[in-house]
Image 1 (cartoon, rainbow over the protein chains, first blue to last red):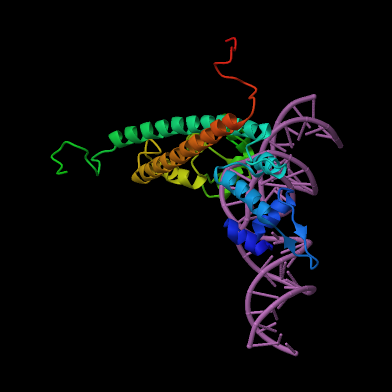
Image 2 (image 1 turned 90 degrees about the vertical axis):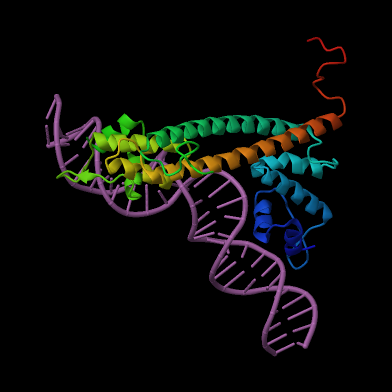
Length: 132
Length: 132
DNA sequence: TCTTGCCTTGACGTCCGCGTCAAGGCTTAC
DNA sequence: GTAAGCCTTGACGCGGACGTCAAGGCAAGA
C-alpha cells in the first residue's frame, strides 16, 4: 500500500506520515519507483501512534509503544518501557488536572466577587421577584 | 520609571514589556531621549496582565481587564466585558478538565490492563507474601 | 499523446509569548 | 576620555506537529 492509502485508512494525512518518517518513528520501504510502501503492520503501528497522540502524548512518548509492537509483542504496551511512559503520563495528568482545578476555583471566586460588586446586575438569581 | 525598573518591579523582563507594547496592550510614553516612561498606574495594569497570564489567559483575553482599569475602574474585572471573559474561561476550563479526567481514566485503565497481562510483574501489590 | 492523479523532495508558514543576539545611542561615574 | 550600564530598534530562534506551496517524476486510462 502507498502513502495516500495508508493515510486515508488511518484517518490522517500524507504529510503526517512523512513527518513521522523524518522523526524515525515510522520508516517506509521503497518501491522501484521511489514510492513509499507500507503493509498492514505499519497500519497497526500508525494507529497506535494516533491513539496515543489523541490522548495528548508527545510524539517521542509514543516511540516505546511503536518499538514494542515492532519487536513482535501483541500490544504496544506489552513492554516495560511503555508502562513507564503510562505512569509518567498519569502523574503529569494528575498534576495538570490539579493545577487547572485550582485555577478554575480562583477564577470562579473572582467572578463571584466581581458580580457581587457590580451595581444592578443584569441577571438576578433567585430573589427580587424574578420569574423563573 | 523606565522599562527596566518596571520590569523588575513586576517580576518580568523588558522584552516582555516591549512585546506587550507591540500588541498595543501596554503603550508607553516617551522621554526626550526616546526612552519609555511608565508610572504607577502602568505597574497596576502590568500586574493585572501577569496575574491573568499566570491563570493561563491568552494575552488578548487580558485586554478587557486592562481597558477596564484604564477607564478608571477600581478593578480590572469591574466591567461586563471582563466578566464575559471570566465566564468563557470557566467554560473552557470545565471542558478541558473534563477531557483530561477522561483521558486520565483511560490511561489508568490501559496501565492496569497491561500490568495484569505482564508475566511475573516486578511489584506484587499485597499478596504473595510481600513484606509490607 | 495527453490528461489526471498519484507520488517525490525541499522549504517556508503557522501559532504564542517571549529569549537572545546584534549594532548602536544616551547617561553617569570615575 | 572612557568604561559601565542603561536604553533603542530589528530580526532571527524556539518548541510541536504538522499545513501548504513549488517544481517535477511516474503510472494509467482515453
